Image 1: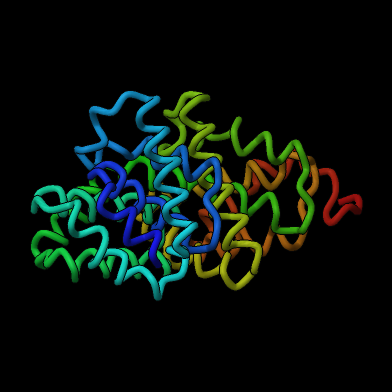
Image 2: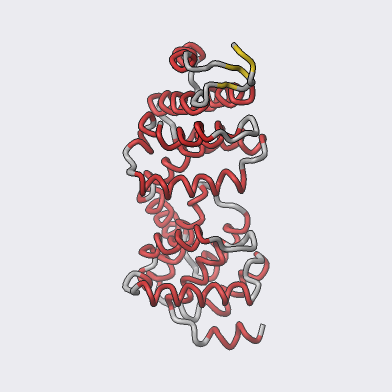
Length: 293
């Protein structure tokens, strides 16, 4: 680890913060263009990054990325030593340490869940920086409050994607409806096309990484969608959005019906309310599992 030891003396606070961000998002072994974009969008969570111009930020991010991958910081076992020996000397102010935890927590929550690798980074920051529980809780509450709208919009869009892929086929009409029918569901209904494009990319990242497995999809509906869309009105809106997407191509499959039923259960919507909503969209269904009604 000679490179790491030599480089640590030359890390600036922004580079230290960015290396933590890269380590948080690359515990699966890679850093995607979307994740680089996320780091840039969330940079104001860590004040040493706020005043950097774009060119300086990009250079610092590129250096942080090299630092993480050349020193194998995508392996959770290496994170505690990195934080205690090489990050702590450059992030010395208590307020910056709390901000860095908030920054990394905000990044981790873009997939609406803290996974094992992300938790390794967060735990190392808490332990090494001696962040007390009250400060931790305040930082996490600030993130959940500030990004409430974003998190709910991501969850709502994932619902549409789960419906689209339920039968193993991705029909363009249904995929287009994930965007075009968003006015039915308040968390995404107010987004303009540019805002929705980012939310869609984040939702697609969650879907493709975690939700191709049916058991994971069921857990997402039960544990995350039910929490994010947790009022009766939002539940009804989410079911109508899902029904609109499922019937957009004029066909409904048994797999899509199963997802709609699972959504009813997750959102605690009674069958009569669900049937009333679904029947409004059955008129455009010409085939069921590809066979005439």
